[in-house]
Length: 560
Image (cartoon, one colour):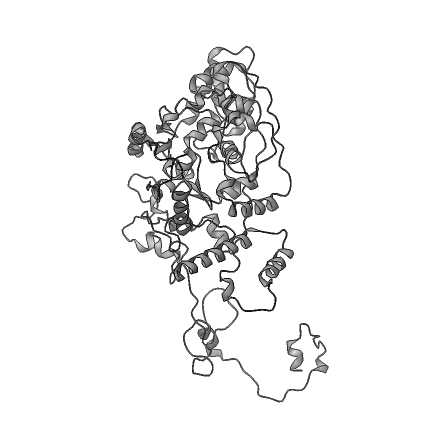
């Protein structure tokens, strides 16, 4: 019977007549252990000495503590240190008695700051990667996949169908400098590859506003914005006073149509603006006999986005996820204000098909193995672009392409940091790059919480001053790019940031592994893992080879 205890299955004796007779001691429950509490009992199991032993304190049933387990090591998800949880960094009403309770504001309004969870605004360096900060890394997709072992899916791209174009809009949109972008959108955009974009976004670091790749840092600069979309740069920032109260009156004043009021005694689902569905319903077509002021108000309803900017930027610079490109169609507009931009070259491409999850895994592995020679660092210098007759807006404000400045749109402020990606301009990258604070406080501002009236010109006054002084923050040209100093920069970057999403499955040097008779034991292990998975992954093996090679080089340098 004892041997059958360890079998994987057993046949129960359901007939009580087959049970063996028991002549041992009788056990009676101790009523003193019964917990007499009001309400429903939370657990049915009675706790005893074994539970105390499993916590790492007290003594086991033998009285000597020989079977006590070691305490579980708790790691904070904010500072990544052992011994405490993330709640220690929170500041709330429980540990701040001077805070007023929610709803007790003297003005009769609810102070939302009293119920928010505040994290420290000071930068706290990551214990393993000095360039990263724990405030950003605790919810970063790369941290969740590498450190926590989570399996994440590709992100979903939110898009809107553009409204039907009317040529009478052209003069008003051209007056604002958006005509090249409007022409690009109305002629049709190619399909997005959400798997490739997700694999790239996994490498985005808010600390530097750059993508951290094994080949170096890359980012979307003002040069890319101008060359791909043809948007003007040297102008006034989009900022001002936001007044949600009476927003329907303002919409009616601008576009001539009033959004519908919410039902009586119903919560207003749109407390501060119109929806894209309402715009599509009311501004799909411009009436043929519309007056001039109606046409001018109708062009305000056209929508655009920046996901396409990132998609074309990735296709221009990285070979990963790049589709087959056919000969572009003939540009049908000849006036100077409607000339094409670089994005037009990617109008006629083959649509990417297949399982998005498998493509995402493939793209992630490829980005882990990307090298300097794979990147097109200066894509706009090729002959095909120089000879295509670009819109003058693409190069009009080129003197500001290397300005370190804040990009402002009402409550949003994001720093433009070209000093981290000087190789994209053909200039030698400094090691380490000049530090540009990206401000944790700015990253905490969320649109979902901005429902009250506020003048963002006062909130972002300092950043507006920086924007007005953009001519004084230009990173002027230095020595041309050279491979030797850039290798020094790469060594610094590899020691300071997380660059691999698919780290080596074995973090031990080959000579320190247990010996075996098979010379290809590591390859066999890799083959066994990939054989039972959905598709092979080359990045873990590639990164392990790099790890072993660096270990050999370091050992050689120490010996010599």
